[in-house]
Length: 409
Image 1 (tube, rainbow, N blue to C red):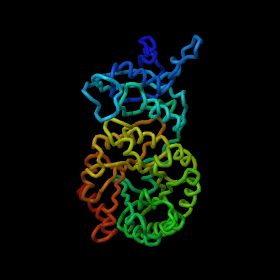
Image 2 (image 1 turned 135 degrees about the vertical axis):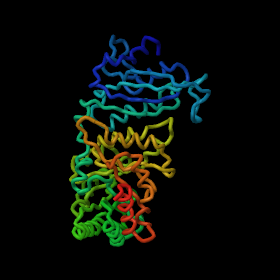
Image 3 (image 1 turned 120 degrees about the vertical axis):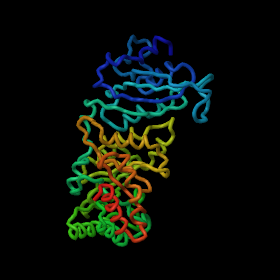
Image 4 (image 1 turned 30 degrees about the horizontal axis):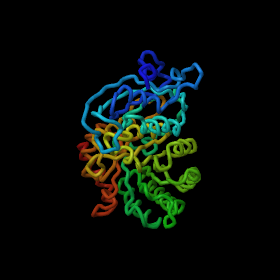
């Protein structure tokens, strides 16, 4: 690409109508000229060849992604991770902001992902490592999406739970129990004070615990406990499955008494979630299988806050995400980036409830609350409730006791 052609992939912010563009922040490592690499990055995710042979035309003004800002933040002798060579010489570490015209794909999540984290960015000439760090949407794009149906405020109203975190619990043992035994364990935790007892993300509709039978057992117990305690309770049923079964499983679970539904976002696909959102009668909650495979490496892939924003856009009311502590292997700053992505202003899209999870218990609640700096989060122990030495009732009660101590009650 010669210098004249390269210039067609650069623009000044003030010269663009930003309502027509997504803003993308990438970090990349390249061999050779960083400006050439950035131009290729824009080309590969948008126009590539921008004119027909023998025709005097240029498709880039309307359709090309364009570099708005480019900064070389470091140089080094080799890539951060061993990869096949993409050239000779020192490696430039760069930050770039790109404006990508959303008219290229419209308000369609599969097509958006195909452009901004598809073949183009990850096979750009000269760029050996790249990570999409953030994404911003103009309101002209957001207005095509429903986003969360209930959001934080709707969940609080339904659970009559204010001025505190929402207390979840992952029923354990998570795999292997028949429905009635599973329901008995949930009963104890609800009686101890849990708001939501949930299926594990790996428990969906197996032969030994069919969703319909499990929901019937859990739904009945949930209603009984709510009547007994005078407090709303939810069973969170996992309906993760093939896309063509999601709406039917939604209907089965809701009819049997599930108060909310868990769907593993990336395994079923964000477009499937968006479809389900149009059908849903209860809140939808995301879990994070596969996200680490995109987000774990600091200099490659997709920052998890991008995936959080997209889950909110698709219509999730709750996003369960890798949380604090060594087991989750997620930097605290990245966890907080995801938390903020749930609640930051996003045009007409409601905030969703962040649930940072991983090996939590009453003992970790004070630290999580201190980091969050707000009560607008979910707290989701598993064994911290269900492996309590005095049983699930005591495990759930320990959360309320810990919260009372935090508040000095």
